[in-house]
Length: 96
Image (cartoon, rainbow, N blue to C red; front, top):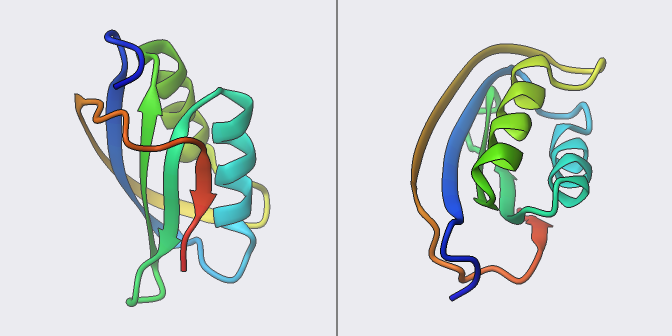
């Protein structure tokens, strides 16, 4: 099941985050931080959802980066919660 100290971050990013490469940027950030999980656009065209698992310090850093986002995006709000990791992911992927 992976690292016993791992946690799960479940987040929704709201703003101008679709059509600007946000999901691919998140994948790069998560991969750099050695996190696993997924990111996807939501149907409402203003939000992106993601699940990331890994060390708490790395998830903290991802959360900081998500609040800023890439230059091409505008993040208005970040809703995030933490829980225990499932260990179900082998890498970080962009979902449709």
